[in-house]
Image 1 (cartoon, rainbow, N blue to C red):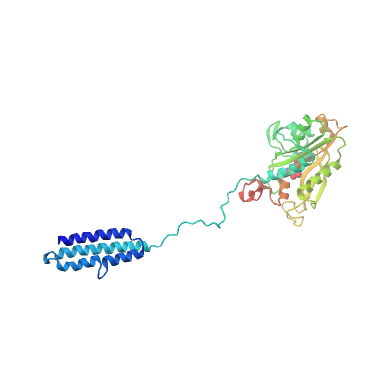
Image 2: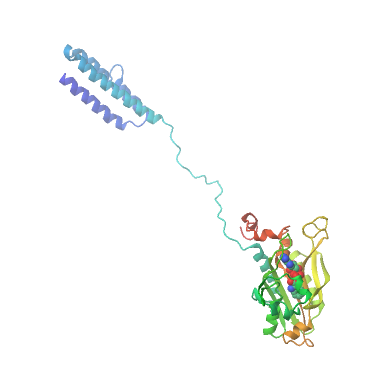
Length: 344
Ligand code: FA5
């Protein structure tokens, strides 16, 4: 019996060593045959040996050999299940998939458009000037020929900070500041933000951008104003754009004209167009010959010098240039809108 016990331990050890090396279905099959094979399996042969064990030890010897057989079968079953398990595919990279796009910031469409405007005027020899957004009553109104309580002030619904201090309602105060500190010839544009008490709609905002233009020199006439503005509008919109000059009134220019361009949203075909109101035209700027009184206010001799000025709404003009029916889009900061402009 002691001899058989050693043989059982030896077979078990041999099986465990061999099992460590069996890594595929074929070697496991060979292992099963070597240990449990019907004729010459090591465990099977142990059952043969039971015949020669003394009768009183047979029961215990049989239990030990059966236990070994159970151990070998169970272990083989586990190992076979492991090698048959489906192999997970290795992680691969599909080089044909498009890459993930990282969006970088782009200039705001109004900034892009302002730069376009500036480029046209820089090309004509104009300089760029800036002025404060908080202005005094003098620069926003009085120096521009709006005496206190003048009814023309009502056309600009003004946001006051204190009695004499306000948010500028237009960029025209910058022309006064420039004329005060420089001598003619003057050829400038002044882009900037302006503020009015307005209810927003597709073509009106309470805060918007204007660009002011001013030319002062000897012999300047309305023909220069008309030629320059027509050239500028065609540079922005192309040769075919329809432009019209319409008589108007500003206290600081005489004569004055507003400039309309054809409604790019409906081309005059929609009687209920929310942009042009069905007229087919939309005003984009005010202009005129600088009133001699304004020149006197800044000590420029109106007998010697004359000049013209204009003030254009950048947002409203950009709306037409980009074919957008609604100016409020510019300020809603919706990335789906903003990403359509500039480099993507
Ligand atoms: C003026 O502001 C004058 N300072 C323009 C001027 C300058 C005339 C120099 C003569 C000489 P007006 O209020 O019309 O004018 O505004 C000029 C332009 O600003 C308009 O043609 C329009 O394009 C734009 N604009 C006016 N109000 C709004 C608004 N609420 N929202 C957006 N754009 C506006």
